[in-house]
Image 1: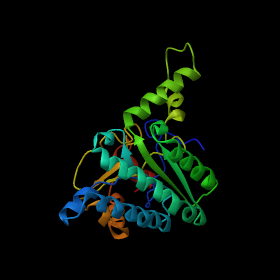
Image 2: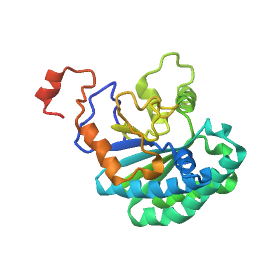
Image 3: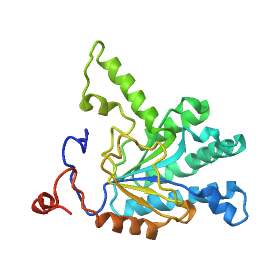
Length: 251
């Protein structure tokens, strides 16, 4: 399915967001606050992912995109990066069968070439296993950056249209990492920071933002409901006037 861009047409607006994107921030600070090593926060964060996947599925959300590891996270201490990679492998080993049993599709996007061969094969196998599932699509952004996404899409677009000197958004969009999903309706960042940190720079053009102080390990179904309730109070105009939105019957 090809989804239209919010800058070219007005997307369908529903009470329950079709696509939720989350920066899962605050694992390390959650642990430090409890005088625990940062690793404990990351382990607890994986448990929170499981809960939010279940919550999204039960609420009728169709796409959930999670920022797990940015292209800038390689700057973290080597020991922490190594731990995150091990957690990724463990999560794939433990969760993929459950996701498949619950009709959930898994996608992993980003520059995966930097991961070791075992992890790359595990990712490919998980995507193959869940490819035909339809209840919820969970996308894990790993070694992902919004600028990387746009640049790799431009490269593919130029290759597809050799010799062209003028390009359109419609020509670029199919090459973006999340071309299989509609643009996010709701973006959530936990942990108190209020920035998007190179996440989905293209896709968040008309997304509603929700920032909260809750550290990711404590973000649960109730916290998700609070974010959705905030989203439901927004008037999504997409460049139109309030009168036009009222006349259309949206919101």
